Image (cartoon, rainbow, N blue to C red; front, side, top):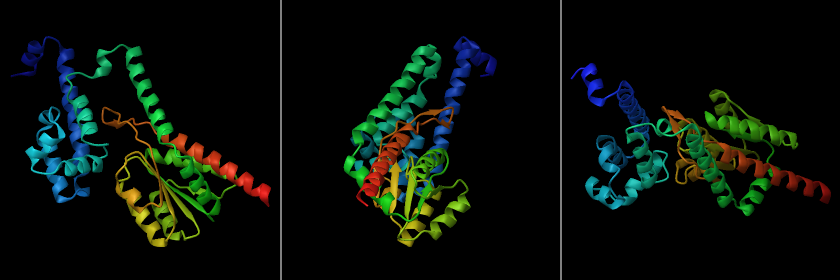
Length: 286
């Protein structure tokens, strides 16, 4: 069937464009999933391959049904979803459903309705931060900052801006620290750290290859690691001495990562305030 015939069949060229955009969005999602394949075990790759082959069917399956169909355990499926950057199977199905919808929801809603949906997502992210806030952990992290000779921040991509903002505030509070952008500089910084320093990692997935490389180097140096992550189970947390976790809702627009890093900034602002109070008390006692 020709494009002209297809256009007539759907009724309008706008409808045809909407279907075309849907296909392109699905291609983007599938490409993102395939890029993670090398980071998975053989069994996890089997699960991913099934995801890619039967996306429409997966949306309607329960976890137990999917496990039976793939001949794996429910734990394997959940672990695979988390390794791919999702919070679990339900979160993966939700994101898959959004990509499979016939039309972009932003086109079906008025501008105010669309903005309202984004506002709700931001509100949820912030509520999650406050829900997971642990004052004892903040105090422990503030002590680690105070005791460290030098503090190095490790964050790439969107996470770098979070590191840079926190680094500037920490410097104004009187603590020597550095947030670097260049990947080679980050590698050298990791190699030069000692057990008397502190490395702070910021990563949404906790599975970014460069971040994991730096974390392994830092761990080998014996340097304490403090991590801030947006997904609960990942390899970065396994290498860390202290972990701050806040779930961040996935948001991709035309293949672009639009996930807010505001929850990370809120956490780090809280940490900076706690460190400031810790330093003030320390000066008063001297």
